[in-house]
Image (cartoon, rainbow, N blue to C red):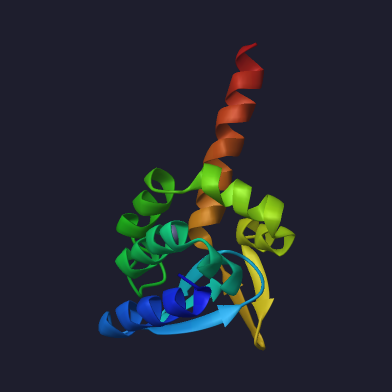
Length: 129
Ligand SMILES: [Zn+2]
C-alpha cells in the first residue's frame, strides 16, 4: 500500500471525527483545536500512522485537560517515536514544547508538565544519593 492510500484512509477518519488534517515536514503529530498536524513521513509506516492518528483523534480540542495529560503520559509511543526521529531528524521538533509554525506559536503544555515531573524525579534522586 502506498502512502497515498494511507493518506486518503487517514484523511477520511480525521474528517469523520470532525477534524482537519494538515501535512508538514517536521515533528510527528500534534493536535491543536480541530486540526491534526502530521509529519507526512509518518504516512510511510501505515501501522505506526494508524496508532498516531488514533491517539490524536482521542485528544480533546481543549487547551488543557487531565484526560489529555494522562494520554500523553501513558500512551506515548516513545520507542517508535525515537525510531522515527532517527530516520527523519526533523521529527525531533516533536520534543520541543514550543514551535513556531504558520505565524503562530504552538505550545505543548503536556510536554512541559512531563519534563517538569522528570526534572523533579531526577533532582529528588540526586538528593537522595
Ligand atoms: Zn498526545
